[in-house]
Amino acid sequence: MTAVPNPDTDTFEQQVLERLDRLQASDSQLKEDVGQLREQVERFNDRFSNYQQATQWVVQLAFTLIASATITVLVTTVLK
Image (cartoon, rainbow, N blue to C red; front, side):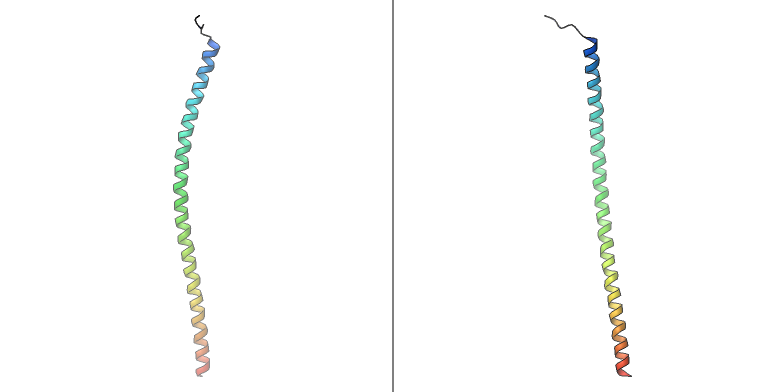
């Protein structure tokens, strides 16, 4: 018994194959996009870490300057 080609079935199969090809292309593109996002997140984390460290240094510097000014005022007042 030989299967008779059905144009509707062939068209449906062709459509399914085309969709699979598009999905595969989309999958590849999504993988590339995720890779790029991962790199961007790593760079952002590095920059944020640098910013956080710089902010901490500025706070320490400000505290040191305030402490130095306070000590200077106290010493000047006591020695007068």
